[in-house]
Length: 392
Image 1: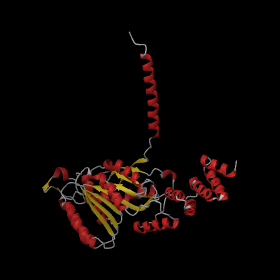
Image 2: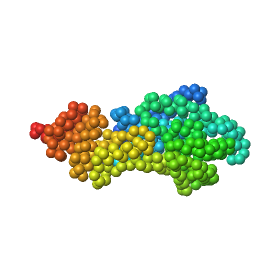
Image 3: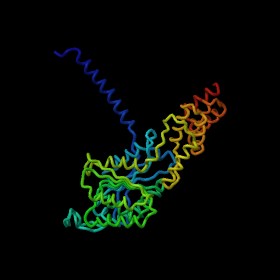
Image 4: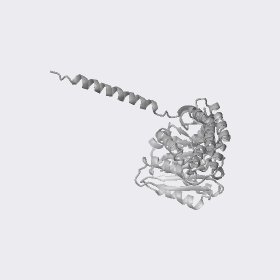
């Protein structure tokens, strides 16, 4: 005999499953969609089609901001976590680097593309199977320099600052690129570079290259895992003895990582090294003026070689922190500057209206809330504040 409580229990379970499934679909709907694109370029230099993955900042389509670009070799292996690291470090709460575009070059034949010199030597022995197609580095460089970079600069809003991240065999290509096209990339992340066979000549040529380029500027971050350091130590010796002061570099070894797991930490730390002077703490309790912010970004502009400006979100965060600290005049100056730099943003006027309201300037508060609502009629918060100010 079936107990009478069974149907009730089954009905209750079905009800729970229905509720859970609704919650599940709600969670799926709320997941942020990555702003990623796929492009296929027909390369004249290489005589083949090349796949490119592009990651854009989350607000790319809603702003007019321009961005530096991070180029990835072995892009199919590193694209996902590198894009996430860039988003994480550039998020307004962390603010350890600017937002940037990530461009990943997918592999076709990495041994061919990453080796500048044709050499059959591998581990001191001739290996025609593995090394038979070496020596395509010059053509691969022409593809990047004359086809890929111009395409990205033409089709996306870029700044004249490019970073090349290269792992393993890609490391020797990055070193070759610095010698053959010194101004193509302003910074490099060389992860566990594999330097062997006839391509060791690239390392040998690096010392005379640096000696003849004493005005060279740039940044290079070099890493290695728990592996043979001989070639990397040779590279560091060259840098220590011949690199000009304007060419900054740093080496980091990760003993707990191997050749393949070292990439994740290397990219994170490499970006932190390149942008070590970027951070400004707008959550601190220190009084900060617009002049302080301009001075900070002026120093960054000098360091990176192009005009750097604070983003709308950055200024908004700085302004609210000063407002919370009761530094209302500083907050007003920051918010006012934000409206001038971003005159089509409703939020900049909304923030300025709030600052004027707390300052006791009712007329200017009303003026700016009205401007905000004019730009965005759906600004319900601004409408509520306007009603209160006008006594409606």
